[in-house]
Length: 394
Image (cartoon, rainbow, N blue to C red):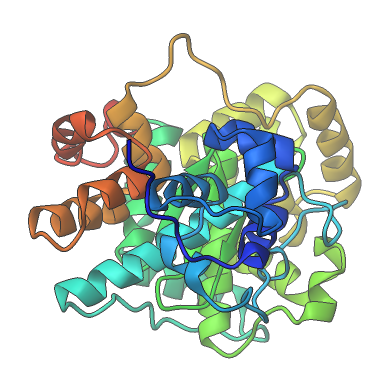
């Protein structure tokens, strides 16, 4: 049998891609179904992979095939710096699961840009902007107007999942890719993003409860419009704890004002006096009414000087001890087509399928981009026809 034609790739690229993904050579070999010794030989330049083997490594490291044919590892862009951190996280301390999740998000964004170029279509752009010193309520109303969501809409949604899908769809229509992952511990990441365009990315942790994901979604969208206004986290700022970062505090305030506009929120709060006293059931009822987490409700009440800071701090300690923030886990889980659309998002999935149907995306690329076998494409295409907010889309 003839030997496969080897890929002319620099060994340093193979080593760099694995190290950057945060994988030991044994783990990378297992994920790519390649013998450890063979992978070691490739990285040391003693042998070369075939194109098919190189593609498997690209899938494992979430790197486009073309990156392996560069003359040397790319410099200057480190997603661990670009993505913001949660309390307790420091640079270069991310888990392999988080690194792979970030790499996957970047991989898919670059894939989307390339597909738009192949289709000859313009990349959607989010042009909304904000500045840190603007009034919270003004920016909150601007966000609501941009997304086309009224207070009446918010109260009418049947559930927190319906609310999450509606907010997500509205933000995706602004030219933002929203991805979800369940592979990262909630203690490490609730959400993060790449705020600069074109095609900014928002990444949510779907282990989080839907109420929590809604606030994270608006928080990250606020980072997008702050970046559009010329304000983004500097490398030095990014190494500080989120509570010490100006743009983090501003994003929290702007997101809260968008989700809970002062006049409407206070009018509704007057009907939930138990919530103002810190009663858990009262807070749950209030949260279910306006589809915002109890944590966000109390934080907003503190900022409006309606409850003491001490109450919020005590409740936060109680909730963390009782895993309040985790989403309920159902038995069996959703079907594969629901998982794909929910995790990758309708815009990206639709773009890949459109590219495939118009012969600008290969079948191998579809498998790479969506992470599923071709036999599921018909089911995924049918899933796209569900209206956002239905149970099947949650």
